[in-house]
Length: 454
Image 1: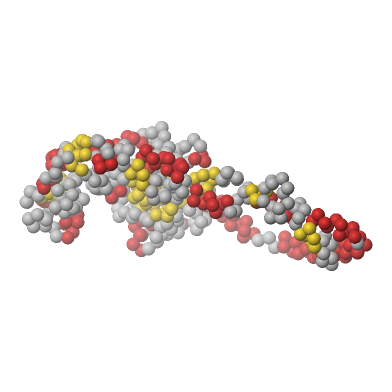
Image 2: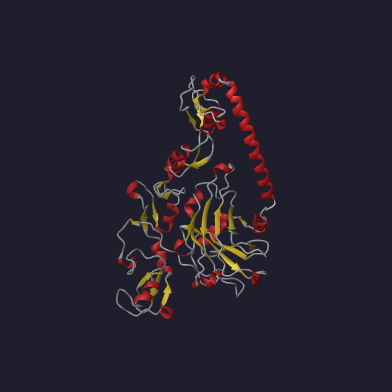
């Protein structure tokens, strides 16, 4: 998975809240064993009720996720048109949710042959291991395949898988192999003059040298061409030409030596002049770049990962936080927040990650608003560095006026967070070595190309 620029998911307010979260409806087909009764259907989305809320005034219900849209449009019950007052007469109906959770369902992939059946509350746990469920290829090719064939596709068929060139050993995507072979220096080619009597092909990077210096069939100029001899022939016949008129060629050689001596004198004078005009700004630019890069770049190790995911699923601790870090030695102070089970509409489907700008010691000297590119990376812990499939997500802040609460100079302890709500699909975490020894590593890099040097 290659690293691509993503849209910023801006969030007003702080991300430090640990209040109850509403789980979004996953894109799962529910196959109930018995026909679904009317009372169990949401009158707004017409699907099975998920996290139902009760309208005490009329006794009807709708999904918790459908309630905001209902209040925004009509504020009335879709069944009997009773006015719905969210502050006084709408409550979470946990007992009814328990009834729904115990409804008997078949696997969503029963049509494909899965024989599993059980309670609705256990369906999502089953789907994490169902061999008929389709997973999106982590390489980013767009294909969706069953888990049993996903690894074979990723390693043998996916045109975005990484392979090694059999000639030079460079790592590249399979879809780039043909173009690479067209420029690969180690690729074997025959001599265009067909001088190889033993059928030995030459590497592309050696071919020109062979034509310039070795090929007996290559047509070349007389060595005294610069002296005035305009004769050309194949290399194997050139010795005969030179021996036929040595006196004339010797005179041409003397004239050439005199001409080259004059040219060397002119070049020596030009070089002395150039050395006196060495551009100090080039050196200053390099020093500037080193100065900006000298400082903190965060690699965040998150331990006890299974426990943190479990806590997030239960809504007890939906968000965890990194230690604060600096973008450079005298740069912006920032901190990360991570939702192990996703945030908002990505809950249950994606890992969500956000960054916020904290009040820092050097804020009065820095440029605002913050405009530097942020790169989040989920690190593959595979022991072979060449086989790692790191997942990257790049954010380019948009410094418009509306984004000042996120990118402006902090007036409180920290700004509102921004980041990637759909950072990594949760299913992807099980495909390689993103989780190892119950730990994951998140790396964040802040681009310093236009960063101010203090």
